[in-house]
Image 1 (cartoon, one colour):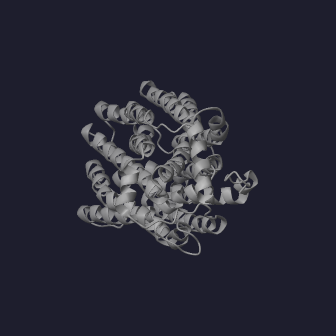
Image 2 (cartoon, rainbow, N blue to C red):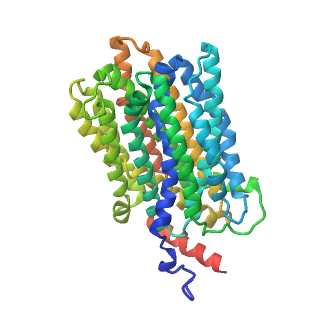
Image 3 (cartoon, rainbow, N blue to C red):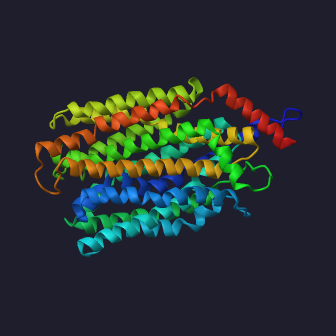
Length: 463
């Protein structure tokens, strides 16, 4: 501490590049499956595994009942964990193998009866979501204690999402070519072998994150009181605004990503033919879009130094929603215009995810400042539940939309079915984004208030 101020010295606040990068690689591990689920899982279940779209949509919704209990329970458990390695880091080491194995198991595609396949999907998807909860909530909470500085956490968040979208780029660029090459024309075998590679990579990266990071912010030593912690969380209005926004924002991600493969296969007419080296139209579209998003993520730091996080998040969300909505009006042959609009929307949307996680860390500071209780794990578990709920509801909606508009897998689609696919990829997700932006209006932590909270907390900790 600087004598007499209670404020940490700036040199003590700065994190090493290796630690910021090491932390970021944990989200690369998450995204090897997270992004694969967002883009490919609905398609895999309907067009490869042979399940009905509505049945898949119902599965996505029903299994979220488990997350309603497991997410906050994991946050509470992590907040109460005390080991020589900290509260949150031990879970990165211990849960890495179950996470990788279960992610791979989801794509094994056993030759069961239709009923057996649906049961297998329920069981493996539910177990994988539990493993994801057990490793990703502690991972997210780790960012809230990696540094006491809000500015430093923004930098860490930017590294996190550069790595996350780097993994997303690998998924978007190489899943379709890899499954075609490794499967030799058998999509099921191609998915199995591709996901085996990603499982091994995710385990190694989570272990690297465990080894390269440190927990620096210690919770105040007060008696554990779950009711008081839940009450404090319920009074954390900035966090509630983020929670509501997160549900709708991730709903739009799930609806749009769920419609992507259908949009290109059935509307644009991508038959898997190579247009560049081993890449088809879909891979080119996703690859360039994700690279553009990485560029947007890299702009997070400069943008947050110039603009308030709240205003920036609202503006970027609205612009991104408008650009996505334009896809409804494009003709199938306008592929390169699609690429251009998608890249532009991706650059605009890039800073949104780092902003959300940095703002959650500010909410943890705010909660401790207001109530005297620091519930970092509970805050991030709530955010994780909002994300998974949004993704599940969005994926469920995508399945129901396909069914409602008369989609039939691996068949020429009717005009009505094509309309539903186009809406899934454009206007529906744009509308959900705007609802998410409206919720952020109620997030009332500006830069001056965050800095004052940091200083007061530092003084309390010094005392």
